[in-house]
Structures are given as C-alpha cells and as structure tokens.
Amino acid sequence: MSPPRFQPPAPTPPDRELPLWQWLWQVYRNPILTWPRAVFEEPYVLRQAGRLSAHFLLDPALVKGVLLDHVEAFPKAPIMRRMIEFENGPNILTAEGEYWRMLRRTAAPGFQAKKIAAMGPVFVDAAQRRLQAWQARQGDAPIDLAKEMMFTTLDVIIETMLSGRDEVDTQRLGEAIATYIDTIGRVQPADVLNLPAWAPRPGKRRGTIAGNYIRAETLRIVQNRRARPVERPDLLNLMLDARDPESGHALTDQELVNTIGVFIGAGHETTALALTWALYLIHQHPSTEARLRAEIAEVCGDAPPRPDQADRLVFARQVIEEAMRLYPPVPNIPRIAAQDVTIGEAHIRTGDFVVIPVYAIHRHAKLWHDPWAFNPANFDPELAASRTRYAYLPFGAGPRICIGMGFAMLEAVLILASLIQARRFEIIDPARVEPQQTITLKPRDGIFARVREVARFAAAA
Ligand code: HEM
Image (cartoon, rainbow, N blue to C red; front, side):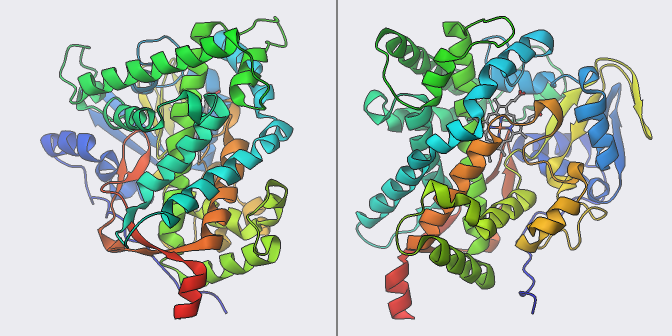
C-alpha cells in the first residue's frame, strides 16, 4: 500500500507577471514569489523589461546546453560574484577559465571519497554534541530547527576547516556567517537593475563588517597552521598540502583564505538547510518517519551511526534527496551570456541573463509525477537512475558541479540518522513556514519544534 499523500505548504506562484514596483519589492523580500506559474509548467520562459532579457530554462535539454554543452559561453552572473567574492577577487566558486581550472584541479583531491570518509567521525560527533546540548536544556521551550542545524554544521565546518573549536569563537563566527548570508547574500533590486556600486543596498554595511570578520579569522587560522602544523585529516591541511597536478602551484595565503571562505559559505548553510527541511517534512509524514526509524534501528541498532554504515542508510539518503527536491538549498543557478548562443528555442544574446530556477525545475509539471507532494519514493534507486540527469540539480551539473557534494551527502545522512535515532520533533504551526530565497532557500521565520526523546516518547505512547 502506498503511503498517504502529503503536500507541504508552499507559496502559490503568481498567474501573471507582477507590476514593476511590486516585482522589485518581492525580488528583495522573496524572489521565488516573482516566478510566474508558467515557470513551473512550460519548458522555456522569456521575460523582458526594457533592454533586459532573462531566459528561464526548465527543459533538461536547455539546462544541459548551458551547464555542459556551451559552458564556456555562460560564466557566473555578476550578481553571484558580488555576493560571493566580497571584493576579494575570484575564488573557486566564481572564477572562470584557466584560473578556475587550476583552483578546481588543486582542490579536487581533498574531496576524494577516501578523504571524506576519514572526516565521517566529525559528522557523527557534531550530531552527538547537539543531542547533548538538547539533553542539558531545562524546560520544554521550542527550538528553531534552522538555527540548531546551522550550529551543527558550523561545528563540522570548524572541526574540518578551521582547526577546531578551541581556536575559534564559535558563537561570533556563526553570527557573522548568518549576518553575511542575510545581507550580502540577498538578491538586491539594485543588482537586478544593474545599478552602480553606490546605489543603496540594504544591510550592506552590516554584511561588510561580518565579511571582514570571517576573512580576518580565516587568515589568522591559515597563518597559525602554517606556523604550527598539526596532524589532522581536515580540509585545511589538505588545502595547505594541495598542489596543482599540472603546474605544481601551491595555494597562496590569499587563495587559501578565499578557498576556505567559499567552503564555509557554500558548505555550511546549504547542508544545514537540507537537514532542516528534511526534519520538517519527516515529522509531518508519519509513514516516512516510521520507515526511517526502522532503517536506522536495523542498520545501527542502539549505537550512534558509524560512517561505514552510511551506505546502508538508503532510505535516509532518499529522504534527504526528496527534501532537496522540494526545498533545494540553492534554489537558483544564474548565469550571464558571454556570447550569442541558440539552444533549442532559446535565442540568447550576449549580456542576457540566464536563469536555471532549480526550485521550479524540481516542482515542474512536465518533469515530476505529483510534483508538489513529498514522496521519498521519487528517489528509489531504480527510478532515480532512469530519470533525466538535468531534471534534478541540487548540486548543479556539468564541470561546475558542487565539489562538496560527497562531503555534504555523507554529513547529512550521518547527522540525520543520529538525530532521528534519539529524538523526534513536534513541528509547531507547520503551515506558517514560508520558503524564502536569498542565495539559499531557507524558512523565512525559522521552523520551531519541540524536541522529544525517542525512548520517553515510546513509553508515553
Ligand atoms: C547540501 C549541501 C550543498 C548544496 C545543496 C550545494 C550546492 C551547490 C551548487 C548548486 C553549486 C553549483 C553552483 C553553480 O553552478 O553556480 C555548488 C558549487 C560549489 N559548492 Fe556546493 N553545495 C553544498 C555543499 C557544499 C560543501 C559541503 C562544500 C565544501 C565543503 C561546497 C563547496 C562548493 C564549491 C567550492 C562550489 C564551486 C565549484 C566550482 O565552481 O568549481 N558545497 N554547490
């Protein structure tokens, strides 16, 4: 018997284009609400305002055209560079051409499966520390799952990239990262309209202060580690030892700070959101929760999950994949056309914006059966293998695919299994939750839940 259908609340796309001022306000407040219904139903949508053209590509063949077949013609959009470079020049996420290839070649060995597996215990320990923090709490006040998952993945980042918790003011760094993402990481109407740097951009000052702090801390840690090497299987050591296999180039301090900065920015909030949305969905769908608990019990027994068990947590992985379908942590992949290119019905001219709206592709009427419903069976291994590659893009695709994909999936599976094994979460007012697009897709006002110990819950039932 198939599990009952469950459609989590989601904003309804507008039936037609919004008037300009409403559109600009919504672009700042929550850009996915400006995507018209057509984006969720048609293979290709062209939007024009004056001389600006934005091509929304939904059809997997068009997406492949941009991310793979004509990748050199579609560099990262300036808006992404502004959010991510933070006036420090190109980095592995924003660079193009030979410089990008050098950075990617140099960093790639650090993300080999064997190296990531060696970091597995850090993921499990971070989850166990979070469980202990909940254990130590007095009373029954709700927690914000989004914040709690941020703390958990920040713990991982600090252990794997920043020399451990003894070296860093965790609280301050976490707040700086959150401020940065919430200010510089927002889509600003001034950028959409291509206005000059002096045009007002709300939050820019706060974001700049936060960005300077993150950068100064990273530089301090890089220099400390160079001066006093430590034996640890962490990403900082891997990047310090990394050499470009072609030229032998070792990353300079500036390149290391930029690279580690991107790993922090790209890796921490995204993974936290994948977990947050997964917990939100699981605890509104009892049959998923029950199946997940059964799998964890069978694979791990009563002991905390071990990294070598991750491959057997097949359903846990499916749940995370489905959560990232409905709520992709990176909801949009923007590019700009560096030359005139025609891909299928899209005639793209130099300077045009190209939008790969991952959130809409993942809920597209022509690509998914019952696209707005939560159904981890979408990722049953056989079904997933038969699906067109470019219909599911939480980590992007083509040569610019996320370098941290394996790291993030192992981290998410192990943390999810550890948390579900020991606790369940009663989501408070789930219908109130609104996915909001900044650079990532987060719950606009958090997701609040009461934490229940599993054993106690079972006894009370
Ligand atoms: C669930 C977690 C994650 C999601 C959903 C995610 C998503 C993405 C996406 C969509 C891209 C492609 C962007 C584009 O083409 O414009 C990307 C690139 C990237 N991600 Fe991730 N990411 C995650 C975790 C991580 C982690 C853990 C790290 C590092 C430790 C990381 C590092 C990077 C880097 C460096 C790039 C740029 C790669 C390049 O251009 O060569 N990400 N990520």
